[in-house]
Length: 190
Image (cartoon, rainbow, N blue to C red; front, side):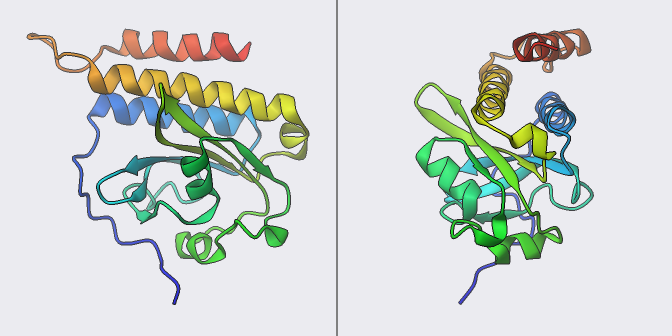
């Protein structure tokens, strides 16, 4: 019996607008850096043992946010469980790839890169880049770049989700978010 992604029924509160904007910026930037057809961030919902699409750029961006699937399934599940990044050039030949999950999203990629979003010892989720350009997935330096970018995104996510709210302002300003993005770009050498 195969499982599919459950309908979008949030078991945890949706991220505040600043977090949503940060995550959207991360997937847009990752998609551009790697010349990919799509990019997504899946956050781990530990109590439900599920991965949840929180931001999508490219294929599926209109309907995937909020969709869930079991955390132990597919390449994203493996990356979340192992805490290690992964590149798969031919998903048809991969035993880790869960075609049922991909088909349920409406987009079945041929190749992907995935890196865990790690803060300290905790995996927060997974950053995936689907169908990146062949040059972007050609070797270890590219996988390291994705890992660095995912680590920077995890730090920014952690900062935004754990900061003490200020009495007069609950969300960071646009300038603060642009500064975080600038720091990520500096890290990536742009």
